[in-house]
Amino acid sequence: MGSDFIRLADYAVEYGGGPELEYIDARVHSNEVYRLIFNNGELVSYEYSQDEGLGLRIFSRGIVIYSSPNLPSREMVDQTLDSMLRRARAISEKLGEAYQKYELHPIVEADVEYTVREDIPFKDNIDEVVSLVKDLDKHVKDSSKVDLVNRHYSLMYRVENKYFISSDRVRVRSRIPRLILFISLTGKNGEYISKTVSLGSSTGLEYLDFDFVLGEVMRRVKAMENILTKAIPSPRDRLNVVVGSEIAGIIAHEAVGHPFELDRILGMEGGQAGESYLDYGSINSRIGSKEVYVVDNPLLEGEYGFYIYDDDGVKVEKRILIKDGFVNSFLVNRFVGSKIDMKSNGASRAANFYHEPLIRMGITYFEEGNMSLEELLEEAGHGIYIVDYTEWNIDDRRINQRYTGFEAYLIENGEIGVPIKYPVLESTTREILGSLAARSNIVRLHPGTCGKGDPMQPMPVSMGGPDLLLKGIKIRRRGD
Image 1 (spheres, one colour):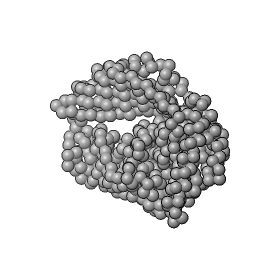
Image 2 (tube, one colour):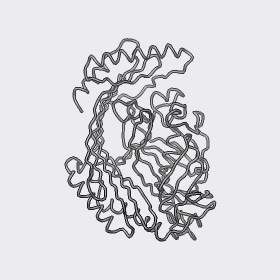
Image 3 (cartoon, one colour):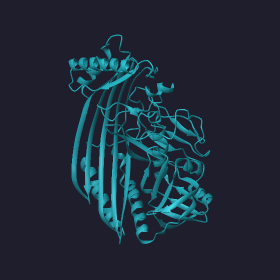
Image 4 (cartoon, one colour):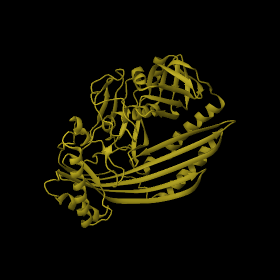
């Protein structure tokens, strides 16, 4: 990061601003991004971008104001802060005393620095990356028993550097590299079929072990072959259903994580991304069976959504959202939490220097249970096993949702049977969580990019869980 921006951040926090300025923080935020795009084994695009700048946030008269100076100078910082104070004054006067304004909850003082280590740095090994993807594509193409008419690979490497300082005596420096490989395959054997795969981590190139990546891709290719040559139509009925970690993860993220964001609960996201089926009085209310245990824990090193301090300067903690089927906690940042006197749990994140921090997830998943997959299938007896999905959707309040399976099988006498085509799990959040009967003992996590805000802020996250047994869930077929 540029030392000029860091000096300006320090200057801004020392600025003072008079008695009206109760709090100020400054965040120097840079993103360095490499993106390589391949189509059918050929490198078709190599992109590089970099942005860096300063974001300022003040608290005055119960109002929070965020802005980013467009020129890196002390004069511009002075003008920006003066303008922000005028805006806070005008908004406060317009809202009047009846409006429930923000409060400033205390946080723990800190002066820390953390850097995620890369054993094999991306920037020093770009030629090896190109060779790896080309070799991967050749193996995938040569090993497939169906015609893979399109094979698309997009690899993004991003280094995020931050310097945060606040008038509450918090100073945090961080550097997190993130790597994600997105693969899209389209196969043909009388009909077309597509599947996407995402693999990612907050490490260096050591994550992209060739055998590991090839195994992950070929599992999906084998599923394509089964669907195109062996699969029978999915049953239509109320069945016991085992879902894999990919579906568990999208349920955890979309049906639990988003509606547990406090700004959504309070209606602050209603015009942009939707609302929530919860309200601020939902804490301690039952939402599912005693097997429902969902957490958001950004502290898992190596995972794509990893971070330690948020963009309010708060140290992250493991957030237990649902415990034994009861709503336990929300995702909270420092300022929105003051609306219902709830302490921040480190959920404030911004994508760039010019974005205001919002309440965001990090790593959201169902906790592991105490059964093996084999025991889960035996408990299911007869039903279906949906390993992963090909498409999904959910409504704005996160109540009604639909997941179309990709790799899927009948469960017959407690064992995996013949492959089936495109079973559709269509249900509600409360029915899914209420039907959860058991969890396997291995959690698998998957990388993703979560969108929120206006303008949209894409955020690196992880999601997942163990295999889940849902009892008595209605199954349809794609096209029903």
